[in-house]
Amino acid sequence: MGGAREVVQMENKRTDFSFSEPFLGAYLVENVKDYSIDAKTIVLNLGKRGVEMTGDELKPLSSSVYSKISIEKAEKLACIELEADLDLRETFPFSEELKAKWQHVHEIFPLPQLKKTKLWRSGKERIRNIEFNLWFASAGTNCGLHNKHEFREIHTQVYGLGRMQKFLDNDIKSLYNEVFMGPGHTHGPFYNKKGEYPWHQYYADSDCIWMAVEFYD
Ligand SMILES: [Fe+2]
Image (cartoon, rainbow, N blue to C red; front, side, top):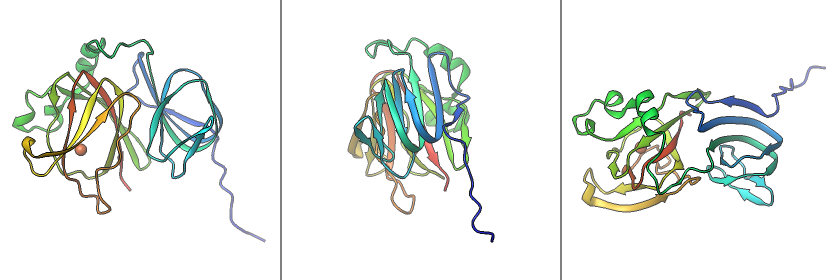
């Protein structure tokens, strides 16, 4: 007899990210079946297929803000719950807590030009081939031009208003494309099929938090 062995994966397998805070809950849910989300939540589709979200389709590598929805089926969703009443026009009320707990960018990348950059990163969470982490930048911060990564990245805006910017050269004056980032938005990939990037950076108009999603396959 024999035949292919059926691997039964647990439905609605939820992994809470270690960088969650009382005001910001982040988690991954896999093998999603008849799953309800009640609280206001940013939902990012990390599956290969579109997901039916109470009538609308959430495309792969896209995100939006949902509440009171039921999802019939999805492969993999990253979810972020942010305290609903935070006012985008204010400075981020928990910034000092994050700065104390997270690493300053200069500790991670000890480049002289990053020493005074008002940018901090949370711890990382790796689930198989994907790493997740959060960034916080103060209002008015140029987060640093770069064009190399050992992974393919996308970013989901969690709080504040910012921009992903592309440049012709390693020169802030060579800007040629801006993608504005508001809460719940994920920008499209900047990398090509070979994993090559243009010069790019994040610019924070207001205090900003965003989630980096890094693919290692
Ligand atoms: Fe980047």
